[in-house]
Image (cartoon, rainbow, N blue to C red):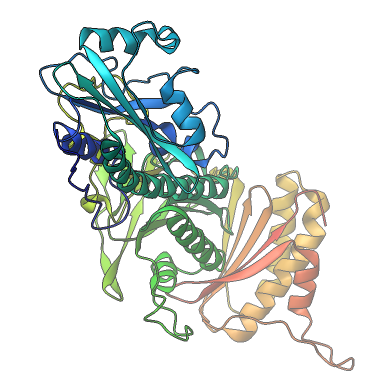
Length: 530
């Protein structure tokens, strides 16, 4: 036998080569060039993210990754099966001191054979007389073990064989270490991802909220539930491209951007446009382009039972009601660089299920190296570290829509004249009394008075007042002026200009939402009183 062994090739791209494929190349190169039988066991740290993240070496298991032999030899363990490496054996000693060794000849009554009866039985069946054990290690981390055997009719292993096998093992160990570090990065990214996926808040607009991110996909998937003014809610599902911490950081940034714009009451289409457009403030836009990704953002209003949805790329919105599932088709498009943002408006029946889904931008380019490299004879039921690939890898967010109770809504159209202020105060006080909130009447009437006064002063069209009893008392005044009100700091001698300051002091929040015909100024008052 010759001691010349061909080199094992690595990956052309990122270190995503599967440990099974790499070690299969190793045994194919070694048999029959240097051994009659070659066997590789790999550490779970090259197969499992959780184990790759563990800093403890003791207790890490090993699995049979590759096997090849001449003359139809028997095999102690199947590919993918967990294989113990008992103490007191040459295999365990090589793992501990990370040194290759030759055991030749193998005494038939060697004590270590009794410690490993499974391998010992197979060695006797195959007339093995010479053993060479080479650890797979890189950066002082044990990644696996290679065992070479020679049967009767072949010469014993020599030091030249050991040197050739060690060189080959070093090549494979470097590739396995890259796989382990890639798993570490994926695992850290997934931990970051799950830390950012907080439990959805309780809002009255929806119920039965359920979010799902792919367990085995890249950690760039996310979802969010955003409480919005006027009892509305924003639902978001997104997916950023990339791997590991890079993808998790990109999804964190995307989630923060969309939430920031959403709470400003910006239209969904504009929210996505602003979130995905390249930043004009980057000193070098070419060196730090925005992370690619897809997203769907839906705003649901339980008062009108109306939804506005915006989406990009592989994102989808589906409404499931008594008539079945219906995919929402886009009505308009807005460009976002090379992408486009689809916008649609639609009604949701009470109890209808909103389903948002967003596939990974990299999904069409992904493959499963484990299954491509899995050799014939692998038991599909073993190796829990390598589950069967899923046909889709998408973020899914579902929520059942709830319509606001009609008795919790009061709406009045008011004339654009000064007498409407007193009328609005009286209607507000009467309505709150009927709702059992008389203690809130004075404060709410004062807030409504200021909002209606501003609407009369700065607009010329019709005015509408709407009260909504939800987790808070919501007061809305709409007019035809698109200019947003802003608080002033009047001089002590001025008698006016303090309306918004009074509103800000009496309420727990206020803001402006724009419509096609003007704007809506809203406030929220604590139901327990101000």
